[in-house]
Image: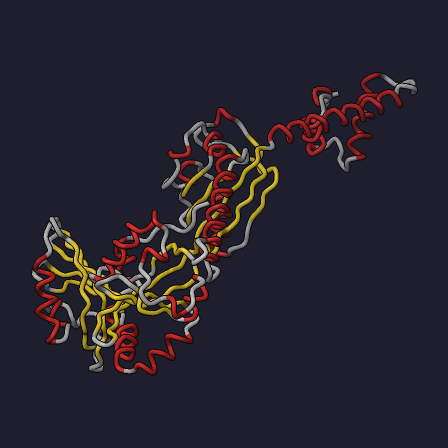
Length: 438
C-alpha cells in the first residue's frame, strides 16, 4: 500500500532538516531554506544578493570561492568544510556539498552542521586526558588509523569486544586483518575517500572478527591529530539488529505487496483529494482496465456518485472508517450495466500526528447474493400464498374470492393491505402480482 503523496522539489528544499541554498554560477545567493537561516541565525532574506563565500570566515572565503569557480560539466560536484559566523558571532562548521546545474546556471549547496564534531575533534587534540575518557568509555566502538599507512594505532574497549581482539593487539593491524578479502577493494576505496574528506556520513561496513565471523557495523568517520600524526577515526555501532529489522521490514513489505497484488479482493488506495494512488489487478479488472490506468485520476471523475463522494470526504475529514453493506451502485456512464450491489469498506491511513494522508478502499460484489436472496424471498412468498389458497379452497367460495382472500391474508401477516403499499410489495416479491386486479 502506498503512503502519502511525494513532496515537490520546492517543499523538499524548504522542509529539509539540513541547511540548503541556491546560488547563481557567479556565487550570488538566490535562496536559502529555513534550516540554513536557523543554523546561522540570519533572517531568511538577509543573505540574499550576497556572494555565498562572503558568509564564511575571512580565512575560508578564498577556498570556498575557488571550489565554486572550479565546478564544471565534467566535474560538477565538490565538497567543502568551512567556518560560518552566526548572527551571535559564534563559529558554525558546515560540511557543504556543491552541485552545479549547468543547464540552469545555478549551484545547489546542501550542508551538514558539523560544529559538534569539529569541537569534539578540537577537544581531542587539545586534551589527551579528555580524549582517553571519551575513547575508553564510549558504548560505541572507536578505531583510530594512520591516514597514510592505513594501519591501526588503537581501538577502544567496545571495539575490541566487538571484534574479539585484545586492546594491545591493535597496534600495527591493517584493514586486511579486520575485513574479508572480498570486501577489501571497496573498504580501501572508502578509506581513501574518507581521507580526502569526501564523506563522513554513516555507512554500513562488514567487519571480520578475530574468529573469522562477520559482523556489520554502521561507521561514521572523523579526523584527528595524535602527536602530530594525521589520523582517521571511525565511530562504529553494531548494525546487526538494524539490518535484521530492515530485512524484516523488507520481507513484510514484500508480503504486503504480494497480498495487495494477488488477492481477489478489489483494493484501491486514494489520496486526500480522492485521486487514485494505485489499485490492484482485481480492482482494475472490474472496469476492464489495467492497474496503470488509474494513478492520478479522480475516483469520482471516473465513477460520479454525489452520495458516495460525501461519504469519502467525511472519512478524510473525521478519520472515521466507513463500511457499507449491499449498497446499490449504477455506472453513470454505463447505464446498460444495470444496478449492482456491493459490500465495501473505506479505511483512513493516518500519520504520526493522526492526520489522514490516504484512504484504502476494498470492495466485494454481492450482486449475485442479493439477487439470490430476492429470488428466495419471492419463492417463499409464493409458497405462503399457495398455502393460503389451499386452505381457503376448502370453503365453497368462487376462485376469485379465494385468491383475493389469500392475498389479503398474506399481506396482513406482513402488516400490509391491498392499498398501494401492498400492491408494490407483491409486485416486487411475488409472481402473483398479475392477479391483483381480481
